[in-house]
Length: 169
Image 1: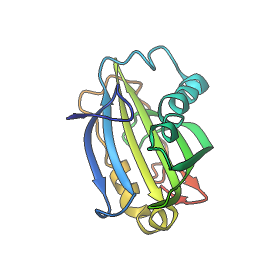
Image 2: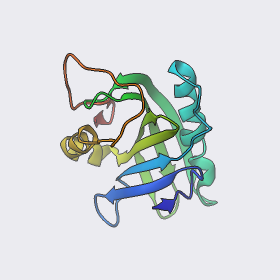
Image 3: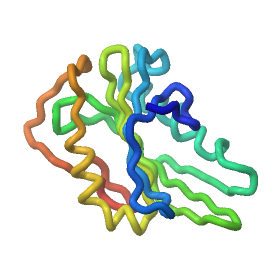
């Protein structure tokens, strides 16, 4: 476990990257004994995800990096395993003398009693198309042991979590 450098309340459990030079990554983090999201639900929870995770992205980058985000989707959903979740999808654009990135960042957030699980994906437009199936499989296989959040059942199970201009996750 390592403390997340951008989101100080989160502990990173695992992060996968498609290549060492790529900006496409998939990670799972945990906020233990959460006070940020406690008591929130619906649109208030979704808005707080944007404030806590999307808005800090650009200011956390080094000087000389031009950055913008645009929120394209927010919704509540039920994970394939029955977990109540919240999803935000944002377009992320970054550029500097050394890097250029156009893609999306997706946050799936699952309240679990006093804790909050976060599954995050950052993918360039090209790699989002290329890795859609792998990312979808990873997301649908996510399991929380001793889940204490709201449990729902689905009438139709789907491995697709979000669809945007950069692809389906």
